Amino acid sequence: MRYRVLAVLTESVARAERIRDRVEIVLASAVSLLFGATFGWSYGADNQVVYLLGALRLVRPGILARDWFATQTTHYHVAYKYLAAGLMALSSQGWAVAIAHTVVVGAGTAAVYWLLRALLERRQALVAFLLLVAVAMVERTKGPCTTYVFDHILQPSTIASAAFLVSAALFVRGRWLGAGLALGAAGLFHANFLVLLLGAAAVAHLALGRRELGRRLLWHLGPAVLVLLLFAPMILSTAGGKDAAAAQEIYAIVRAPHHFALASCKRGFMGFLAWQLLGLGAALPLGRRPQSPAARLLCLLAGMLLVIWTGTVLSANAGLRQATQLFAWRLVPHADLLLAALACAAAVKVLVEPGFGRRYGAGTFALVAGGVGVLFLDAAFGRRGATLPALTAGVLGALLVARLVEALGRRFASAGSAERARRLWARAGALVAGLAALAVLVPTSAAQIQQIYGRSSLLRGPRREEQALYAWMRASTPVDAVFLTPPDNENLRFHAERAIVVDWKSNPIVPAEVLEWYRRLGDVTGARVRSRRDLRGYGSIGEARLADLRRRYQIDFVVLGRGQGRGLRQHKVAYASGGFTVLDVRDEPSPGSS
Image 1 (tube, rainbow, N blue to C red):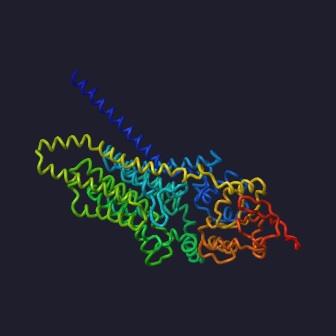
Image 2: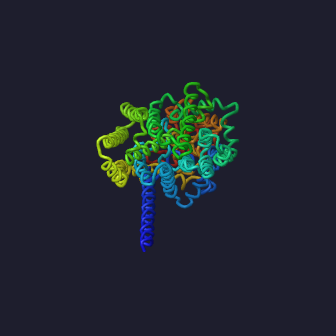
Image 3: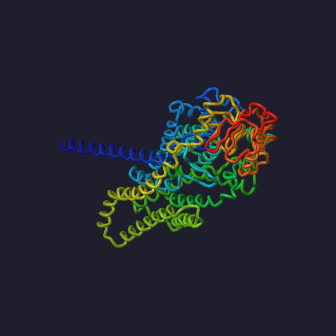
């Protein structure tokens, strides 16, 4: 009878543990989706007006047939094109794309939770995850030079980032094939990630040692190498040829200095330095055991940091065009997130197991304190607010208090009292730490939730005057018409579904195509374009430039903004409203018209 009662009690305890585990998984999933939702729901915004063109042409056959960028340039986001086309077919207004964005960001965030479960006990992992999401709510996963893990739209890099985080979670568990398939998926959606992460993963395996090295490399890197072979012709075409140097200069200096001009965003690397000090200082005691999940994560980070710093130094100091084109600092926010996960894991470990704090010597505490100091220094320069430095300082203070209390207990408390206190904290510590993490997460989440409307193009909608223009173009002009448009209007081609000559946003990547894009910009602005400011030259267009553009690009209509094209008075006005005027230039103006 006694054994039967014990069996029933054991089964009840096991059932309660399973229920608690499921509740924690549901909570982590809900928090992950909440984080994804704070980016808002957007469609046809920002980079999507470029990346969704291929999908739009699949869903709307026959449009943009005379558009140079849509039909005659190299588009390498093929997987994204077909995925987006399926989502757009589900919802013509774009809600499926927007909701998919929340799901993808949520999946990538949840992957970090599973990564933390490999590093910590289950209850500790949830607490560390809640603390990490609070950090991510403040940081928005941003890095230097306009880099990020996740942004406000579903784009190829969003899916690649989420797939990489899934790969990292599997990597720390030693599931090499699963990690390899996820890494291949990341590369399938973004070739730049593929090249960078292959190098980082190779370094990570070498750092893990020679044991089963060949097998690990085969299973983990094999799928990504196969994807690399698919992209090899495109990658080679962007890196070489007689036009490569000129195209790279145009891309790095004219079109995208926000990504490639390291001198202008060097302050952004202060946060990166801070997370290296915080994450590595906090994690070293976690990764002492070789082949442990923490050790594997440290090896993966070592590979990422080597790739990032090598590419950055070669680009900034040696000025190597290939290093700049590699865009190695794209991985900075991903490394920041993993380093923050390590810091949160170590913080919770010390709080819940005060004895674990004895593993931290003066050197590791100095690294962590240095990281907090760099965050405050970064805040003093005005790049970030004081929320994150204050949060990290508070956590560091809690760690110091826990360490002090534990040391005083060992010094002055009796053995029995110390043991009772240890048992009590073992039961209640995770709950207390979890409530503290929620106390941090709730206000940071509330602040971001309030900004959802402002970040959501679907909730706000386009400007009324632009929406009216796009509707008129779709309804009242031939589907094969070609429009000359202000090159700084990046939305017109996608939303009006009509071909245009050129715009600033839609730049190709193959060198010869980059040069053609740059030539077109010069043609429509009437001057050599050195920055986005030079696009204003479009507004001074006159009859002579228009005649030349009509001859070169077979233009049917000209779109003018308020105050533009005042020298064009001889053409029929097809549309005028909301600050926009559209001229019908399909017929030559009569010599006597005015």
